[in-house]
Image (cartoon, rainbow, N blue to C red; front, side):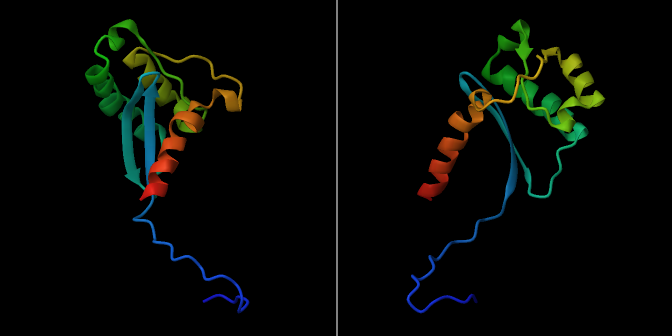
Length: 127
């Protein structure tokens, strides 16, 4: 219950979500390569991230872009702690992915804002 004025509009009946999940997305200029889901309380650690790179991303790249692995993979990810732990850097080296220096933070350099979250918001508002 909440207090409201008698002439206040009725509250909209919001359906509760089916639960939150953690979604890790990997994409390139051609679109989505891998979407990897985890339960809400999952913490992305270096061990989890390297496991996803080795067990999920590399096979997904092989399936979607067979020639890409032979030409080399340029992996640009954000600068969160698990992405730059020694174990993660070693896994990236073993996978022979190239890791460029992280660019300066800029809204212009956040393609997820334009290519991923927009369609995701539109899809969720339709349901």
